[in-house]
Image (cartoon, protein in one colour):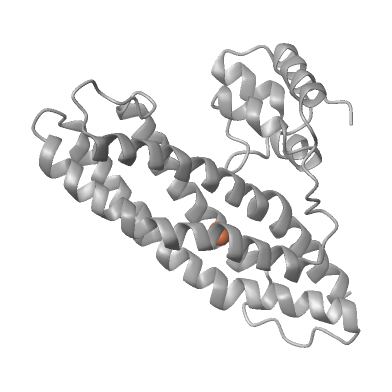
Length: 241
Ligand SMILES: [Fe+2]
Ligand SMILES: [Fe+2]
């Protein structure tokens, strides 16, 4: 696909996820805030859209296209992938991050007053994502998987427990915004998780892991907001008409 500044960020990453590397580098939000034209997002950041498109082309000619195609697989498979890969990772890493947050605040809070807010935001994200994933795994995802099953096996979608799948989706996307904003603030007050000279190993690991966590969260939210949710809405429309 040939991109222009009129394509939205989410269309571009849906077409080829390698574009996300360029977006990450320039702090262009393609997951929570991806449904707007590249041109508009670039103006806001003082970037040149043509140059960004050039960088994306460059990235594509220098790297292999990932072989995962989330546009074509059945939605229950996509749900399974999200749960196994991204929810699995979050559940594994949260206890470690929690320990790091408490230790780092105790040891370095005096010299680095921003740590108080960083750890507060971290604990907020931890609590919110835990309940968020619970809702996805117990309410939204089972419904989406059921629709995928009906699509494959035939049959009718007789009851939609929450009126329309659009309702829980709107709630999940609002919660994604909240996590996205928390990371945005953490980045702003830590100069992009810059490790201070007097940091101990735990401090280094804490910021390093927060950085990895955010990257994974971007891919995770991209798969939900940009692929799973629009496909689930389209499937619901198809099944009820
Ligand atoms: Fe999720
Ligand atoms: Fe989510």
